[in-house]
Length: 386
Image 1 (cartoon, one colour):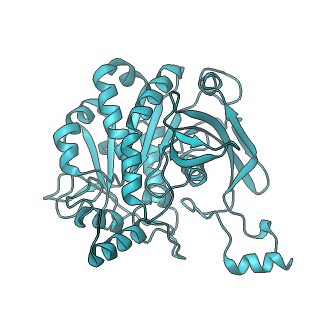
Image 2 (tube, helix red, strand yellow):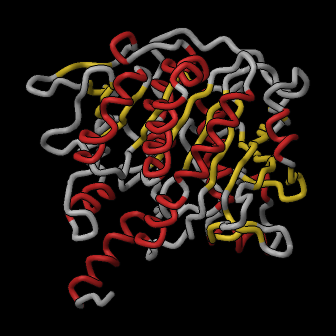
């Protein structure tokens, strides 16, 4: 496919907006309007003086290299899924929503000369020496066992565009821990290449992962014993989750009604008109779906307006937004975020949104029962207040 010079400029601009960015702007954590969620601390979270060690289980359809590392390529073998567990260190002294996982260049220089050490600037870290490869049987056995991880809820995270495997694991640990440390984080990592210039390539890989996610989700739902499953899909991850869950719900309605508690579509990079025409009915019947959208999501604004999509995305509220009875539509434009200049990652960077998910998951409350919402006519959906 050939692009004009103008088209290449648009593509570069679009990719840069979707890429990660840094900022020194921060917002204070809000006070929750409800009581703290009552969960016992699971053995999967071990606290030291500086860090909390969070175990994250994963399933992925990424291809494995000869050394066992996971590649940004689709596994097209007869058994495409691989399983394992990673350990992530979350600094205890950090703001809710902070996702600092690297030192500044200046700090690295000082550390090189021995002026400071890593303890002076704790960051979110993946412990490579704690990485485990699990068989499929052992992976699903952990959800049946009463040992180790207690019988708490499962938070299944599906990442979006431009996300490497390690980053997906760290983000899952951070979000799960900030919502409630007792949640058991699980990642389904599809083979995003982790390159801001490869949007079209990631787009195709996400669509190619729908069948694999559907099969994994069915196995997970049948494996959990007395645990609720909450799904958090961010951005392009919605292209994986939405079609798969709609199909599953049509064939295994009773199972999903019993095992699934919340489906959270955070800044979904999914055409609004396609969702309305093909999937709105299924998600309305499910009755526990939430769409987090924003009118200041610069990434989805570009996705909606450029030649790459040329139609509005579900996660971009814009002048109209999305509303459908049975689905909680929440505009989070006014919720602050840490290091989120694009306004595209508030599901993990905004303490206000994390508190809302805490009430949603911990209290099992729909939006009309949670605090901090208003409705502003003519818009029929909810606005989350700072």
